[in-house]
Image 1 (cartoon, rainbow, N blue to C red):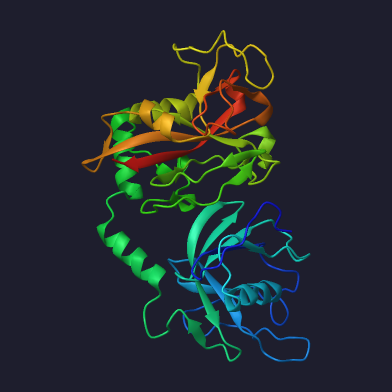
Image 2: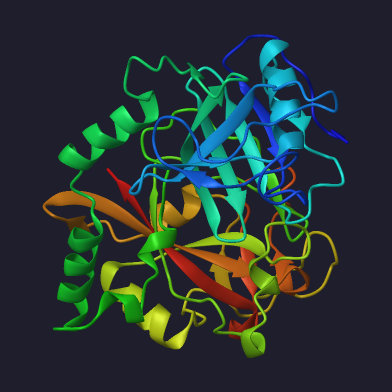
Length: 353
């Protein structure tokens, strides 16, 4: 259930609904069918008595602007939270239909959903339909607030995939190289503009805090390690922990090509792990928090004429972490990873100054 979560009272907060498509398939009792803007394709959700109930849909791809009907059980629980004016951090979606481990954090005030699945995290539009499949929330007479914000951001946004890769290429002399051989831009995540933190989740048994204020350009890593086994990227305790490592624009290429390597500064090499008492030794320095890596990043980096800071977002093998400090009491703790094979970069974070 909702172990570790508290309840709050004001409408417009976040509530968590975990899962992806249910077992019911399309149609009654668990549809997950895509549809166009307006009325959805497929039949409405019904109760055991045949009565049509309100339905909930997500726009998982804002480029195509098609709505995806969520499973019946998801809609029932989301509706209960909505009617009950649920707020952060009420958790729903713990039923047996949770088969794929995705998590849906619903913001009823903005009608958005923070979708977390095996591909990463993204904020997508959310809407509610009544039993006759007419949109009730947000106001159907106005553009969805999330889409309006995205439209405004696209027009004014300088930190595009092209701008990022142009700056990236210029620092390493790549020339005419296909970005898709290095990056998986479709999995980018953008946390600029957020001022409040999301509740931490677990990665490899360690708290993971979303890098607020940054845009992540996803590195192409699927199937690259462990004979194609992507377990290390899981978003739960079976995956590896998340860590950050500050670098320069030029340093990104070396890291992506050769992996992270131990640097010359080894201030804690003769120290001991605060938990195990083991000698820390030489290795790669990183942190579960973003503040320290940002300070070590390139002070003169820029993209499209805008000053930025660069940090590598990595996964680290939990058992390989040597702790100079304990992250439970110091989020900006220093970690040391002795073996380069135990730390894997999977994203380039760009934080505008």
